[in-house]
Length: 60
Image (cartoon, rainbow, N blue to C red; front, side, top):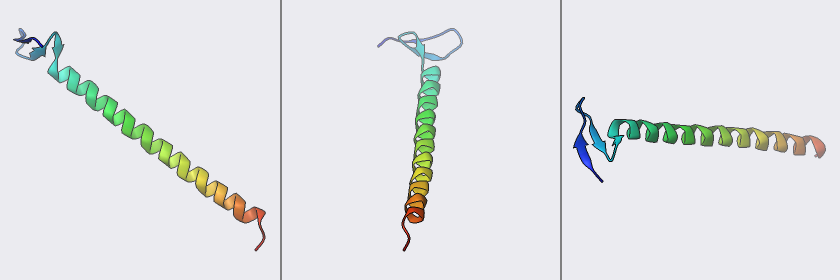
């Protein structure tokens, strides 16, 4: 990997700026966590609805 200082003082690794790479990484990490959270929420709601349906379909 090439390390060189650009004209505005940011460190570059082979043409990619470190700051931009970190931003992309955090964006991907946040997106992944958000999608996982939404999926878990939908799964929880689905389980609650299925449980409710099971309780309604069977008379105890």
